[in-house]
Image (cartoon, rainbow, N blue to C red):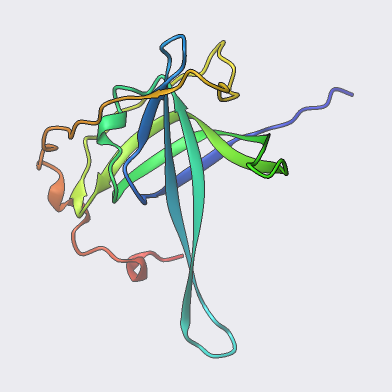
Length: 165
């Protein structure tokens, strides 16, 4: 019997800070950012609402076109896979880290506005996902032009309480 496995992650959340882009020695762009996802539930014992936020690190290869739009507060859809890696910290202790390696990033909106629509990015075909030990340099950051306001009113007035589940 053939065995099959799946390594798939889907996230919809908000960026906690601006994305950072660096380049490998072979000039391949590597963009890193963190996505906050929230979970809200009603405590059965007290009847009060509780909320929990999880932070997920995301790595996007060859995403230099979308990287300037990945700014703090922007809502994004991320599709990718989990990857666990290890490294030695400054004290020589082995540290394990799990990241989402993004295959697709779509801007949904942010800062109270609807975003730029389907700005997909980043395939990682044929490229090692391990971060290079050296040879990384930061890219200059520039702010993107203002996003179109055509769909700005689409999400106004909708809260978590409006969702039926």
